[in-house]
Image (tube, rainbow, N blue to C red; front, side, top):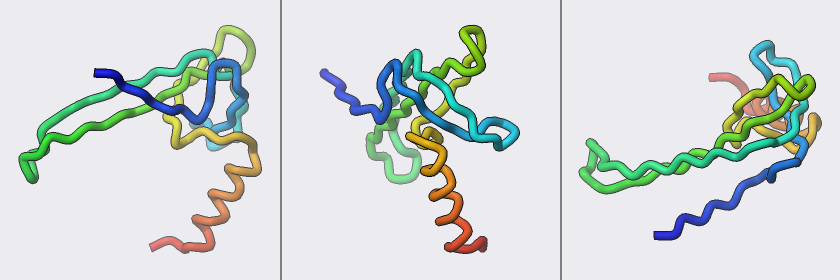
Length: 93
């Protein structure tokens, strides 16, 4: 079995994310971790699979790092602002 996964960022790319304090933080991708899980659904008894992509980012110098899921990484700060603006426009239910 060959598993091919296309990632949004490569090692060495700069990426942005919201840290635990909700501040926009910049980091450099130093590692890409891919987790693939095949399981049997308890709801419909069908085999399903899930692929999770995490990035280890170097932030604040060489020693600090953060691990972030792909869906929480952005190419630039403006992309984060656009996503938040979309959420505001859609409203909160």
